[in-house]
Image 1 (cartoon, rainbow, N blue to C red):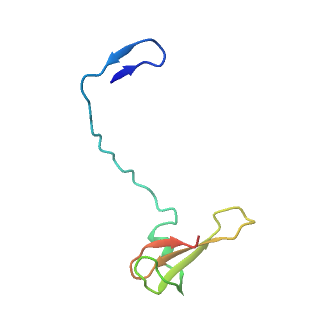
Image 2: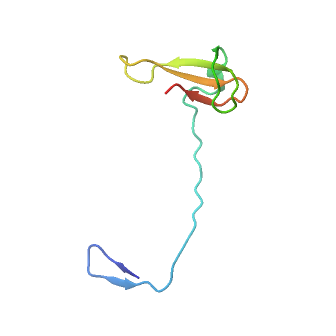
Image 3: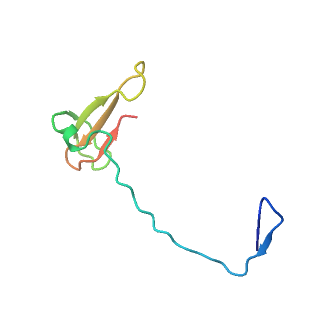
Length: 87
């Protein structure tokens, strides 16, 4: 195995494999739906949670695309608190 420079004729023969693990730090991200405060005064509906099969969920509708397209409905399960949308 050898290392070849793309811009000059330099060639170096590789004698051993070098490996280094670099742990990645996860960045803290903000909740785009506003966090727990946004879900305080929303309505409930009868829909099935895809995660825990519960039949009650909170919902809110947000216009995230252009004005001529329908709004997107976001759901949050009453029991397991996981979120999904109506794709």
